Image (tube, rainbow, N blue to C red; front, side, top):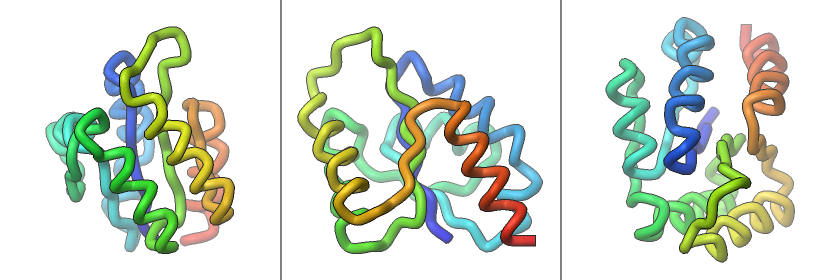
Length: 125
């Protein structure tokens, strides 16, 4: 299973905290993580192995969208900050559209991600 991880600046700590709650499961299972560059650095510092792409504003969101379009991803977790403006918002919208077009689960907040992770991890036991 391959999971893509993205978080806007104001949500990076939330994503790391979320992942930490599933650390044992993520480290023990055959799950690979891929993330946009800056988000990936935060995840890596928390002790996870992650394949880092470009940062979101430099094309990382588009790289993840391309992976989704190629059916290389099983799940996308994107903790968005809906209260802030983002110069790369067109890339964000494109990523969300690609996930919808290719039927790839997309969680944009911790509650949705938690429900998906609990289900996915329980299936992988």
